[in-house]
Length: 169
Image 1 (cartoon, rainbow, N blue to C red):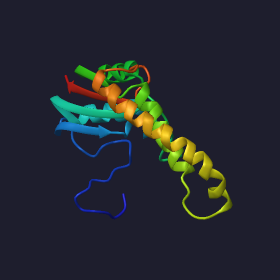
Image 2 (cartoon, rainbow, N blue to C red):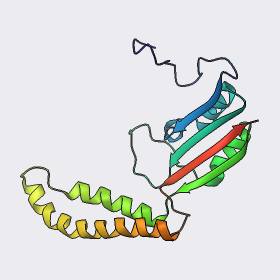
Image 3 (cartoon, rainbow, N blue to C red):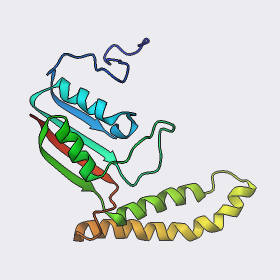
């Protein structure tokens, strides 16, 4: 697939160019939501892992669309577990990354950054008062998010995302 770095194996995005059981571990960080067919990707990861190989995986939940137009999915804990089990994984551990408080703080950071004046224009002059109102609320929510994490507060049903660890059977 084209010329590129010699230390990277390029492939078509469907069939990984490695023999069965080639790897002891796989790392899939913030990728699964970009696969048009996550089942196909998970099957390929499973195929390339040896028995007892470990998969580390993370996916967003409460995240804005990114890498548009290739942002296709959001996964719940239940869907991740079913996808892993269906592809030969066991000893599945799934943890939420953050809570609803973290998700709100994250959204407020995005809002504040969008309202922040970047250059002198009519739009930035009009958005400045909104930024000045949003910034202190954003800072307060960031403090709340950190304190709530220390105290174990917040609902896990609306996390920033999920982390999973699973072992190939």
